[in-house]
Length: 102
Image (tube, helix red, strand yellow):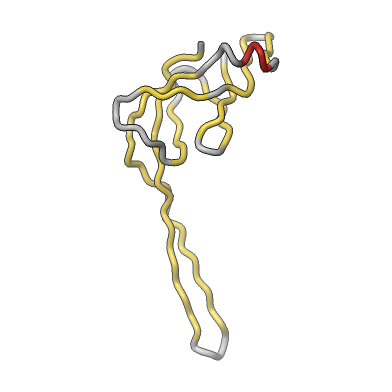
């Protein structure tokens, strides 16, 4: 059984026991968060009706509330003018462990 959940502005495919990284959530380590479901597949049964999906939620436990993504380096360079610029970015993430799809 797996579900597609809306988490942090993205959609993620999750199963019970999976660990996922989502954009930073306002939750501390050990807290439980719930996500709305976009689709559920249980064997050969697919649930996509909005009325049925409203009854289902995915629960996850916060494993690491201070995770970070990879460092991205941005460089600009203009030839023959001496103009060069460096910039960097590192996304703040939250690591979650899926505990239940119910």
